[in-house]
Image (tube, rainbow, N blue to C red; front, side, top):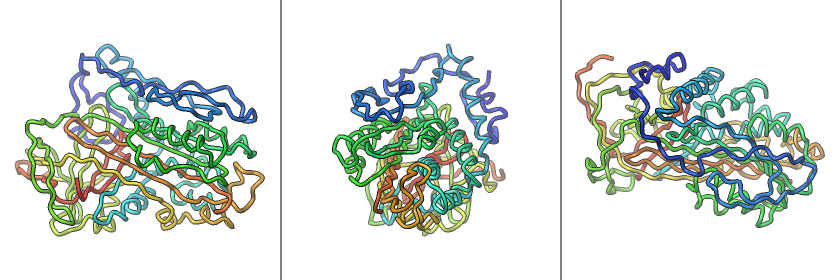
Length: 471
């Protein structure tokens, strides 16, 4: 059975862009301890108060949490020769759900990706558009009035039903844990022990977003550490430095947290023996970089001021590399055609196929953390940051005013080497009481100056995007 059958009728990616193995490998891959499903839902009512419970992280570590309830994550058959008949229909069904939001996120991505990357300057920038989208979707659930309306406008949704349908489908398509690809999404709701909350809102977050619920004393070191432990456990400990300063203000009423962890191997790995060292022309001057090399046929996508190509992951999505033309700064592209390309790269019609593309790219490990308050305000979300306008009545029925989001912490990290990619991101939102021609051409694609990258899932939507100014 040919591998392209996996994608038949599910994606609109042309056949020439899908190069899969004829059959799954006979060698069974080892599953890491933290890649399994999280424990079943705890039968604990919100009104019973704080439950102190050890354990709970998907990495198997002992984490002290203040858990009220945890979601049931779906088990997925491992990708192997023995499990082929069980694995294939599950993956087909998962990918098919992308049709439920086809094209619906274009407006959000076109506006949000440039804004999330606009503050790079001469440094690196990394973000997770999917992670931000999920966090904002949950924020829409716990707000109302103008606060909710502004969020829905940015998400491109007419109402909460739209948001819920898309979030549910996004989660289903992008949650993968089959032994070869790891794409884990997690959400959580953090409540203050002394507050009354609307049970309907808590239930919706649990059912639609698979959000774990926690309850404790805001501002206490134990509760702060529980948040940090939860994020580390759900991001493969890839953002421990960025997590160090996270915590709750003592006057916080609730907080939403969302994470994504992604790990995948190249469909065709780079050979370490082919690595070379050479200069990377960073904005502040040349730096030494280790370059990986690969030669293959394929297409280059072209737009105003940039050229792009992608490399496929095994049984998963792709990683795109966007190289500005000589003399064009990365930041200049964010206000041109590039946002439309990033929102739907495979829908871009301007591509040229070559018989050989000699790719040279640096190994890199880039991370970024920032407060997204000013970014979200620039995108039209303002009321939730204003205590006189913020409306959190769907979850805080006793608080009609004086509640606002104090900051939106977002961090992401992407590591690329010869074997593949590992990436993680988190978003934390607290609410406080205060505030085809020329086929025979041969072309070189040398990433030896600042460039952008994009990691997409099976649905083609960006899981991560970034700018590399210094590898």
